[in-house]
Image (tube, rainbow, N blue to C red; front, top):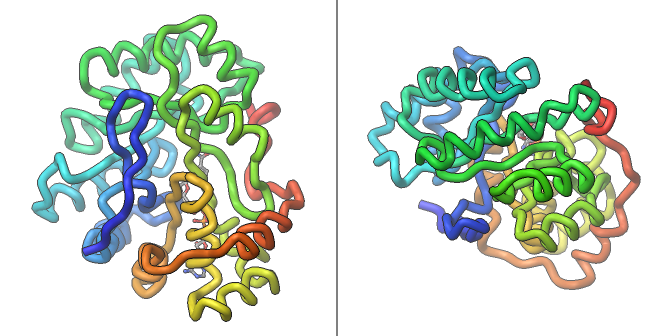
Length: 275
Ligand code: NAD
């Protein structure tokens, strides 16, 4: 069993700093993949209505027999469900799919600034949070301007902002903004989806130095920066490898070498224009 450290969110609730993402895990493979992740020691799982596997993820978690309170389950509200009433309905539907009476974290998946519905959507999240059905609420892909509006116009400060973050896109400004407002930064595509980042000579060099794999080095870099990470893999050996990152430490020179890999390249859309 692993000993994944926890971050304390701004509402006092602990969140495992390393979890498992199930985006693009096919529904029929999800039970086996989630079972492998549980066996490897993951207790935090990141799904979304968009991923089409809330039901299979929830079922696999229930069938594991691990007490619900030992798990940390995140899901997200999809873009077509923004707006106060639609968001409340979407939340009920997610709980039903998951087969759970609460989630640990509920996120607005994208801000969609051109539609301008995220403030009223957030009020729906505040309601399900007040009811105790979402232990924590947060956002995903929010930029400082969107977070500023939420803090000015609503009551609850998001606990988490989940954004694309990896050595090619380090989000320094956004991370500083989140930290300054007590918001935990969670990295999606923490490995940059593997493309390029894991073959970079700086990464493979540091991996060789520590006798670790490139993925382990990149995940370790995130943890030492204070990011929450949710790597995804369907390959059992990689699932285990990605959580086996607690027994070594990168030194300052390693962190700096990884810090120099910023190129601004995204693997996903830009939150300001994605609609
Ligand atoms: P990731 O950076 O976790 O990369 C996953 C890919 O990297 C795998 O498909 C595999 O090809 C490769 N990989 C994984 N482990 C490896 C290893 N040990 N060695 C070599 N290659 C390895 O990217 P992701 O899946 O896009 O993101 C992770 C999670 O983030 C998702 O599952 C999802 O939960 C979340 N996510 C959220 C958003 C959002 O908008 N909020 C968007 C994308 C992803």
